[in-house]
Amino acid sequence: MSPLSARMPGKNKKSGHKEIILEVLEAIRTRRSIRKYKTDPIDDKTLETVLEAARWAPSWANTQCWRFIVVRDGDIKSRLANTLSATNPAMDAIRNAPVVIVACAELGKSGYDNGVPATDKGDWFMFDVALAMQNLVLAAHSLGLATVHVGDFDAKKAASILEVPEGYCMVEMTPLGYPDQVRNPRPRKELAEIVFYDKYGR
Ligand SMILES: Cc1cc2nc3c(=O)[nH]c(=O)nc-3n(C[C@H](O)[C@H](O)[C@H](O)COP(=O)(O)O)c2cc1C
Image (cartoon, rainbow, N blue to C red):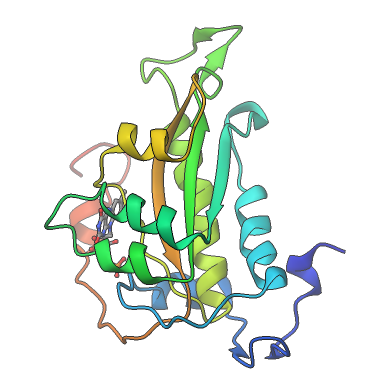
């Protein structure tokens, strides 16, 4: 049985944190970007559960171009934080959360047919990595953990800190930890603004 299906609501014995298993729609609706974290550690089983959620994401022809780096080392987290722009509100979160998950992608796999781009979009790695990372953040939220997708950073500098090899690139990172803030939802466009029927604009 996978860790995902094995998880049952209750108290996580190791961390002492209450585990909240949310239904998918509830998790989608109540997830927030969190930028303040408790220093409490995340146990290996919980970490494996959120990584499993990423692993089960769909991908182009099941190419699974994503790779994940779990960063717990304080010095590496701090160096990663320094790759964010000075005004990025997630900088302290990357520095202080107990774990940072870094999402990388193997290039030239997603969206390709025998090495040739199959569509006008070229490489679909951003799409596949996003699907995996959104699975990850929703699973984390359902377990009472917090995250924030972080995309505004110097990806080349960060990749060199993490020794990401040639042919791969770094896409995003998220702090992972127990939330130390409660945030109100940010507004969303109404469905009427973003959904059309039969043809664009209708
Ligand atoms: C692709 C992407 C990149 C993002 N990059 C950053 C970032 O660099 N720093 C940050 O603080 N938040 C970042 N965010 C978080 C967004 O600001 C946040 O998702 C949005 O304001 C909606 O808020 P919510 O996630 O609480 O619903 C990013 C989100 C996405 C999807």
